[in-house]
Every structure is written in structure tokens, then in C-alpha cells.
Image (cartoon, rainbow, N blue to C red; front, top):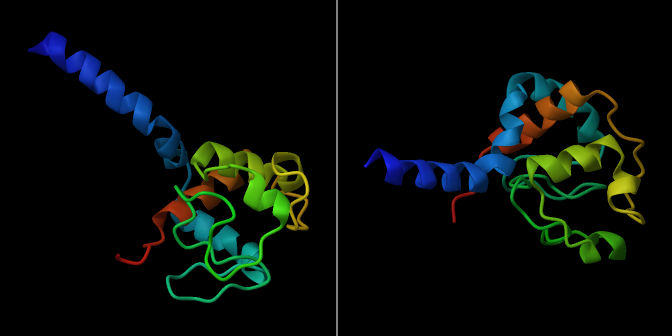
Amino acid sequence: MAKMMFPLAAAVAAIAAPQIAHAAGDPVVGGKMFIQCRACHTINAGDRNGVGPNLNGVVGRKAGTRAGYSYSPAMTASGVAWTAVTLDAFLARPSAKVPGTKMAFAGVAAKKTRDDIIAYLASVPAPKR
């Protein structure tokens, strides 16, 4: 039985690893850091888009797909799925991750701050479907 469990555990870990990466961050601190993002983005379910798209449920969503927001052609064509890893790269330097994005933001230099923001984004309840 133990020999059968190892491959199953390894498979589950491999699938979950990109989503678990945000666990290193602190969502409470990330919520405080998100204040700088609120200049352009909303976060709660049901909030309308701002200058940037509403970020509710962004973790796990394909880039450029939030209803009602006019994305840059670069974003919609990027093929990016927002995982902790891709969000980290985008938050570090948006124009490097998605050249041609209309997000005019230099980025968040500190890895810890990015981890906290990603943990916060992942913690905000998405609407029930």
C-alpha cells in the first residue's frame, strides 16, 4: 500500500506545486500592499473594472479574459495562465512578462512583497458559480 501511495502523492504535488507557491506569502500583509494596486484595480467579487481589470479570481484565470475589460492585444494574445509563478514574473516587471501590455507600472522589486500580494490575491473569495 505504501508503494502505491508514493506515486500518487508525487503526482498530486507536481500538479499542485505552481498553485502552492503563493503559500510563502502573507495574505494579510499582501492586502496592505495591495493598496498601491487599488489606484487601478478592484478586487471584490461584483466590483466593476477600473483603469485595470477587476482582479477577483485572477489566480488560475487565463490572462486577458475578465469580462467587460478592454485588454491590450498583447495581453489577450499572451497565452498566460495566472499562477503564482506567472504573477510573480508579471508583478516584478509587467512589460517584460507581457511586452506590449498597457499596464504602465514599473513593477514590485521585493520578492517578499510580490509573494504577499499573490497570497492576498489568492485569498480573496471568488464568486460562487
